[in-house]
Amino acid sequence: MNLAQFPRRRYTAGFTPIEKLENLTRYLGGPDIYMKRDDLLGLAAGGNKTRKLEFLMADALEQRADTVITCGAVQSNHCRLTLAAAVKEGVKCQLVLEQRVPGSYNEDASGNNFLYNLMGVEKIYVVDGGSDVAGKMRAVADELIAKGRKPYISPGGGSNEIGALGYASCAQETLAQLFDMGVKVDNIVLTSGSAGTHAGFLTGIAGMNAGIPVTGIGINKGRDAQTESVYNLCVKLGDKLGLKTPVDKSDVIVFDDYIGDGYSRPTQGMVEAVKLLARTEAILLDPVYTGKAMHGMIDLIKKGILTGTVLFLHTGGSPALYAYQKEFM
Ligand SMILES: *Cc1c(COP(=O)(O)O)cnc(C)c1O
Image (cartoon, rainbow, N blue to C red; front, side):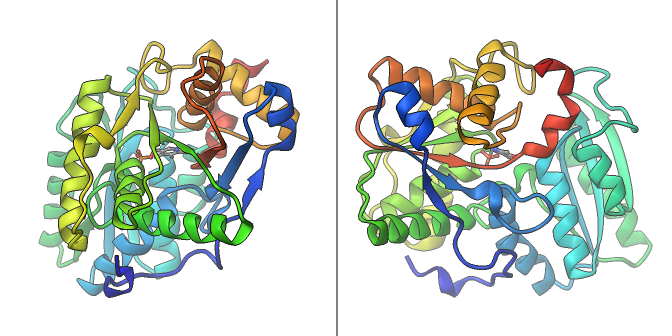
């Protein structure tokens, strides 16, 4: 895997830390648990979309875009970070927000919504859940083109084969760090949403022939649909990278047991996991992604499904906590 062949902007100085979670490990009575702190990536409040944006923004700038259009849920970390990257690069940003939970958009809401406005989003369009969001983004782009502007559409979650390069790169970074630390990890756990993180990391592991199982905790789709979308992106990314050892479908591991009533809807297990990490490690998870994934990791450890040394990828999202305060009272 030669990632240097792809244009990239840099939004983080150096590597994100890998920490041993001593207190959580002790609390659970083993196995050893480590955390890769991608919540500490660069751009406003960090999180996994920063790695994808390094490649997506480089592509947008290469195409001389003056405006980036993307989409997400009403409290989208991806939208917040795309806007942050746009601010850094001196281009405009317009967002299409999907009310996946009916009536969930509130223009005065805290969390990421507050940050959209603070960082000066140019325009927000709100559409109902299940609408043709990609079509809406194209319509927004057409309007801009008619005004002589040059828009660039970045997909939801930044999850195409360009954005996913960021997580192939993260897999490389992680293995180099673990080697340096002298830590042999047996299992990696991450959140599986729009699939770019899962597919990118898994493809990176395959590209280095590292053979470490990557377990994705779903937060949205059922197991089969999620497996399919992760695998399809692995194939595209594997082609882009020219891998001789592509990801096999049987390598795509997804659990959908921790979603609860649906995307972004709080669960008891999520609330407990967020509180546990706050009170044992002073680490802030988020209610939509990493709280559910941590619930999953703890449950799978307790059930003996995840064994040996486990590395949890913290993909960020803590600003959303402030929009969910009452769930934690
Ligand atoms: C987007 C997001 C994820 C999921 O990553 P995907 O690449 O969309 O699967 C996980 N955690 C946080 C905090 C996110 O914002």
